[in-house]
Length: 462
Image (tube, rainbow, N blue to C red):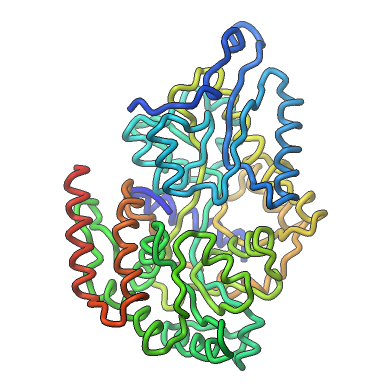
């Protein structure tokens, strides 16, 4: 979920990935140098930083890997001390993030999904890291995704991951329902038909799951309307653009599946992990998601990886494309900024280390080799190393993703709706929730009300 006008950037990002795969808010006290401990330009005195996005303790293996990485990083950089590491699951949760942001409690190095990047730069809540980019030796090999973190020619963060939407489905349930798991739905009519078959397996079975709150409802509304060829805001970012036939199609389809087909169950899924848990439970047939969704389904929710596959988003005319990166607290010292960037590169952007340590992942029986939009320039030294290692240590069956790769090829990638995407998603949660909770929900009225609220929001933001 994410930010403003980067169609060309993210289009290049998705195409590159598919080709490879065929104001005063600052830090908490831990982000400030301890008295007498801050590094100087002439010396190597220790500098302390804090970080976030640490895997939760419930994911023991990934947590241990991360802690091992921190220990190795500090051994290689004895002048840097990570004195605080905050876990998070997921790394971005709107209420928690906003509370920390408002209270000045963000870490020195903090996770930022693309929708938040624009507003953090606009409001001065991220440090200008332009003078320190020499710290990140692989930065020059990153592709156009770096533009997301730029404003007025200055750089305020580093991208570390990307995604493109598709249709995640349970192959085992397809077989149980008499459906062909090698021929997933390609149209929304086929999704409805398959969902009915799966729901008919018995009590507790859900054909299709969807979000309805916590900003995730609006996020998936955006993914769906993009797929229908519509938009959420106008190209200039000044007006809502979803009160259209495409917007009605999204809500009417969900309303029909929920009430006419009875294929969506009665439970509302608010937080990101709610729908993931339900999908991992083995009784939900389909949901929208990206190829990397299969990894947390397995690692965090104990699903059987081989039971799932990802197909292209049905009838998609464009794909919601997003991602994440890391930014630095604006109150960080120059020494802390350099130290924080060293950590970002070590953990997220160095072949063979951290999230790119595919050899370790394979040895621990983690999925390796799933396609997703890469961040590297085609043919770059780093990109080539990453791709070669991913192929060398691959553990996943390419067939699980083949439908997504082929069906998504060439589709234009669209960014999330502007720097105020999160606020827009919160507004769009209401129509998503309404059609799933009220049989008499008036789709036209819901869209009109949401349109008025988004227009007021954008007018206020200027």
